[in-house]
Image 1 (cartoon, rainbow, N blue to C red):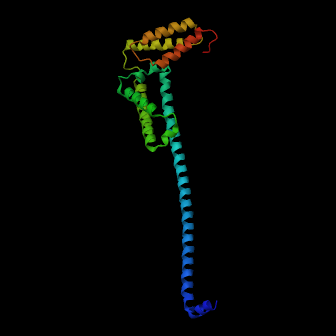
Image 2 (image 1 turned 120 degrees about the vertical axis):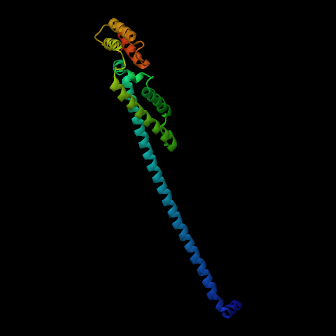
Image 3 (image 1 turned 90 degrees about the vertical axis):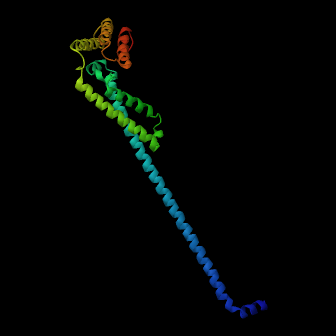
Amino acid sequence: MGGMMNFAGDFWWLIFPIGGVVGGWAARIAAYNEKRRRDKIELERIKANAQIEQLRITQTSRSAITKTFARHDDVNDRWFGYELDLATLIQYPMMTDLREPLTLAFHKAKVRADDLRPTDPDELLDPAVFAEYRDAVGEYATAFDAAEREARRRKQSDFSPVERERLERARRLVAIAGDEAATPAERQAAYRKARDELEGLIVVPPPAAQQLETRIVAALEPGREH
């Protein structure tokens, strides 16, 4: 014990440098810990901001997908107005005449847009996949607008007077075929005559024929809903 006291007494001058070193280490450790704490807070902030940004992008993407689906559906509904209504189609026969460049372009654009539309909307969260589908829908809408404008402008002007008379007879017969006040036999006969009048003049889409035929068959079957 006395030896230690003697050592401390003899080397008292070492206490201050050692104290300084220990104090320096402590300060550096404290600074390092503080830096780690600040870095951790910054990383959490960056992560939180990234999650918020990703959520914003996802919400924006879903909104864009919904709008594109709605646009696609709207053009399809407009087309169904021709495809499912034989009387309307008789008025604007160009809408199914694939010899017409505008009509052909519209039908090709429709097929492409329909093919690119996924069953699961989440597939469109991929920016490249969505861009391809969005552009296809845009081309479909543009092509349909062009074809419809031309079809409504021309109406039946491409047909001869005799052919226009046949179209008019077919239109009247289609009206009888779809008239629930007419007897089933009258409706069936009118439909057959209408198809004969339209033969070689316009292309009747299968859905339009099917819809009218279904209504006629329903009239022939008692108890079946029209």
